[in-house]
Each structure stands twice: as C-alpha cells, then as structure tokens.
Image (cartoon, rainbow, N blue to C red):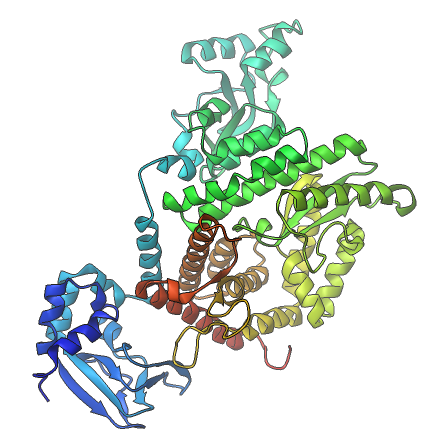
Amino acid sequence: MPLDVELAEIRDFLAGHEPFASLPPDVLSSIPARLSVVYRRRGTLVQDAGTVPEELLVVRSGAVELRDPDGELVERGSAGLCLGGSALAAGTPQPVAAHAIEDTLLLACPAVVFHQLRAEHDGFSAFFEQRGGQLREAVASQRARHMTDADRAVLQTHVRDLVRRPPVAVRADEPIVEAARLMSIERISSLLVTDDDRLVGILTDRDLRTRVLAAGIDPSAPVAAVMTKDPVTVGPDALAIEALLELVRRNIHHLPVLDAGRPIGMITDTDLIRLQQASPVFLVGDIAKARDVTVVAALAARLPGVVAGLVRQGTSARDAGRVVTTVGDAIEARLLELAEAELGAPPVPYAWVTLGSRARFEQALAPDQDHALVLHDDYRPDAHAAYFRELAEHVTSGLEAVGYPRCRGEKMATNPQWRQPLAAWRADVARWVDNPAPQAVLEASVFFDLRHLYGDPALSAALAATQRAAAQRGAVFLAHLAAHAASAQPPLGFFRGLVVDRAGEHRDTLDLKRGGINIIVEIARLHGLAAGSEETSTVARLEDAVAAGRLSAALGADLRDAWEFLAHVRLRNQVDQVRHGQPPSNRIAPASLSHFEKRHLKDAFGVIRTAQEALAHRYPVRGLM
C-alpha cells in the first residue's frame, strides 16, 4: 500500500541505519513519502536470485536470510538490512535469494528514487559498492576524521620522498681524481658507483680522506680501489624511520635507493635530520645510543605518544605497524648489543630472529615477546650453552623491563626449545610439517612468521628457506593450518549482530585480535606458504597468494581491506585507552562505536567468514582439528 502514515517514524528509522543515516536531514525527510510497505509471511520468498531487482528493500521488522544458488547460507539479517542494492546499482542479476524467516515488513524504495540518491550523495552510493570497497572507504573516513596537518609528513615520509635529485654516478674504472672533481662540481658528499646501471659501490668524502689522502693512494687509481663495495641499500617504499635504523645499526651515513635493482638516488642522515625532532626517527636514533636498559626503558615510554601521533596524522594501520615494529626492533637490537658488551663476543655465530607480529611488521601497543635463537651448527652444549643462556636472559629480562611481557607460551629464546642450532631447527620444521599434530600447528603458527633481527643473517635465511620448502610439500600440514584458521569464530552472531562477552572482566567487549585480525593473519600465512611466498607481512602474503592463483583477486582485496580496518580500529582504541590511563588491549566495547563503525566492523567479520568458507573448497579441512 502507498506509504501515507507515520512518515516521521519511518524517517527516524531510516536515520538510524546506513546508508540513509549519511543523508542530509532535508533529503531524509523527503524519502518516506516515496516508499511503499511490503509484507512477507514467514517462509516466503522476498527476493529471487537471478533477477535484476526493480527496487531496494529495507527490512523494517522481522528477519530474512540470504542463500546462494547452492543453498548455502550467506547472511541473516533483521531491521535495517538492505536487499538488492548492489545488484540494482550495477544493473546485474541478484546473486542470492532472500526468504523471510519471520513475518517481515519491508520498505520498498523504487529504482528511480534509489538511483537519484546514488547520483546526488556519494556516501549513499559507496554503500552499495563491493564490500571491500566499503571497507576501504570506511578506513579512509576514519583516518581523515582524526587527521590534522601538524607533523603529517613526519610519520608518513617514505624514502622516495627524501630523494631530492637524480642519481649522480661514476664508473668503477674512472680515476679517483675525476670522481672527486665531480663531487665538488655537484656539491655532494657521495657518489654512486655503477657498472651498466648496476650499483657496485659508493664513494664518500670520508673514503677520500681515509682511503686516499691518509693512505697515500695515487689519485689516478680507479675508483674501484677505494670505494665501499656492495653497500647497504634501501627501497623507495621503505619508511624514513626504517632507513634511519639501517644507518644507526651499521654506523653509516649514506644509503643508495634502489627501485627494481636500479639506483634512483641517495639519501643521507642529513636528509633524515630535516624531519622534525618529535618524530619516531629520533626515537630510534636515541635508542641506538642508549647506554643501559634503564635509558632504553625511558625512551620506550615515548612510544604510545608516537602511536597517538600516527593516528592523529591519519597514518594507515600498515604503515603504523611498520613504525611501531621498527621502534621495537631498535629496542631489541640495542639490548642485544648491550648484552654482548657485557658477556663478550659470542663463541659461535648466531642469529636472533623475531617472530609473530614483530616479524610481520604489524605490532600495535602492548605486545608480548616472541623470539628465538638460531645457533651455528658448530655449537657445542658443554662449551657454549652458558653464554647463549645468559644472552637470552639478558635480552628477555631487558624487554620485560622495557614493557614487553614475557610470552605465556614460552616462545622465547630463554626456552631451550627455542634456542637451538640450525640443524635442530630444521629437524623441528620437518617434524611439524610431516607430523602435524595440533600442538605442532600452534608452534608453527608463530615460528613460520620469522624475520632476522640481529647476528648472522645467513642462519636466518637458511632456516626461512627450509620452512618455505617444507610447507610447499606438506599438503597435510597446510590442511591442518586451514582447519585451524577455519575453526576460529569471528564475533558475529546468528543475525549478524556483534557478539560480546556477557560476564567477567571483559563483559560487553569483543577481542579484535583473536576474533578478527589473527584469523586474517592465519589465512594469509596459509595461502602465502602454499604459494612459496618469501614475505612475512599479512598484506604482502595476500598479494603473493593472489598472484599465484591461491586466492581470488576479489577475496584477496576484501581480506586486505578488512585487515586494515580492524587494525586501524584497534590502534585508535589503544590510543584512547592510554589517554584515559588504561592499559592498551585488543578489546573494544561496541557500545563505544558509532553506527558507521559497527556496520563496517560487521562487514569485516563477514569478509572473514567468507574467506573461512572458501578454505573448505581448497583444503580438506573437515575432521582435522
């Protein structure tokens, strides 16, 4: 029947549900008179699959469920759920059928009204794009809401933004005197040394002083005789803070920038000093010079302020994680240097590897410790065990003093099982993959996120290569990983409501990490390992999985956007917790969120459920866990 009564009530109802909530008040008031009311009895068809909708339906009361052509449940929803909008917007057939599972009233919005609203209001239009697109819009909106112009560039500066001129280079066979003349003409303190556009070294003014003048080298000798060969380099997409960490770790002042293997310029410590003093760039620099654990702890206390700045400046969760991780790397590396200074040189080479979120460059506030020691195979327990036991305890207790709690699962180098020679680690990897018991899957879930932090990088690289090769041959192991990822439950209820704890200290909250972020991490790890990816970050693994055909492009994009949205909400919530004197956590109270945020939180959890269901089609997950 035509809608000619209770217009104000209908307007108020629409104002409480997206996408109508985003419309201006005058537009919202004009809509109810243009709608109709549709009634469907329980068990009857509301919208059929395979037909192009002629109207948008909005559930006013009651409940409906959506099923795909195979009869699989896609979604259940109640008041406020929109039906047919995406298909109507695209002019394509509806992919799912909607049935009333209760006696249901719906508001019918004619196509002409629907298209007019889409044409005139971007927020309304964006709502009916693909779900991943909605999440991207949500992230952008949330970041923009907290963004200011102050210090915007400091935390978002990438290396490519610091390259101020094209590369200035010489050939390796050029005379030293010609290189010095070029540096004088160009007024620069360093030169790239190339061979057919391939970087082979750098020559700095320090090299000219110490390796030429002080050493009495003939200036007509070739540059190759005095250059620094195979210098440390950085990619254009690295953050400035990551570049600084390389400089201070290695006590160098110049970093060539390579893009796809070709030099595009050079950055120096002076370029980084141009960034403002309050930035994390200087926090990393100060940590690298800290004289003891007490000073490191005092400096680490500045990290929550850095994170607040990240949120205020609209930094993406991915870049924010890289900044927080890089500060954590600097802390851990300095503690290792202090430990070696006290204990002396190690008796055999070792690699200190970081695990979990740190390895993925995805740390937020209040993470616990996850690390391991990979010892050279020359290690002898009788002669060397005491040194590495002390080293592990020095660093672990130092991290605890700084504010990183010990891992409750003992996945730390202080645990002898996580402090082994390379051969023993390789045997463990083979055992985990070839006999994937549930405990092995849990151990692998941490250890297969591994990144070199300190010591001999060859040991870390060898172990990572072993992991990749083992995972690709381990079909049963991958199936166990899939079963574990599929078994976790996002906090999304039967009627697509958010599920919170009903009692205890976490009452009325949900865990963003356990119920959302970690599941995406597990799905990305699974597909990345199956694809043979060398990446550790979640987003990079998803991209590699899509490129290898392990994951559809659409689902890969949805998972990436869901991860970014959830990680952003967690980061902003942690900043709010610290500001109110509370310890940062992964828990959030949905009641504190806006309707906009809650809706997109549900979208993100819905993406996760879709990805979990897709695992069953690729991996034999039933009955494994």
